[in-house]
Image 1 (cartoon, one colour):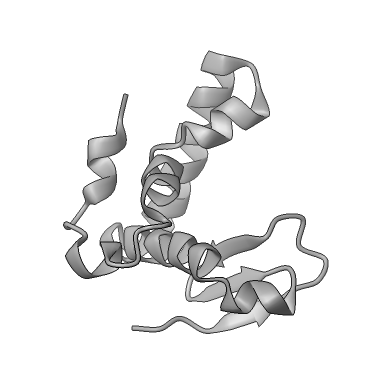
Image 2 (tube, helix red, strand yellow; image 1 turned 90 degrees about the vertical axis):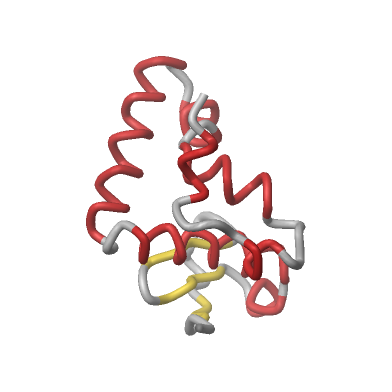
Length: 108
């Protein structure tokens, strides 16, 4: 299922998944396959967890990591959902063969 992409110029990051929309900062980002794939991976994660629990787990994982690493960037990059998305965003076939709850394999 393709997700609607919206340009939000005030966005502080290149892309963001806010179910059911993919938000991007610049019009060119809407056509960047890596950004769109990264955010689509988040959409699949959200659907698997029935959306609201995904965002709650995402936040809890970030807060746990922030406590653990004492650094925003480290905390963000070690969110289990981000680990899957960054690891697989450049694989153009990933979404066709992605396993259900694949993010669970990215816990440290």
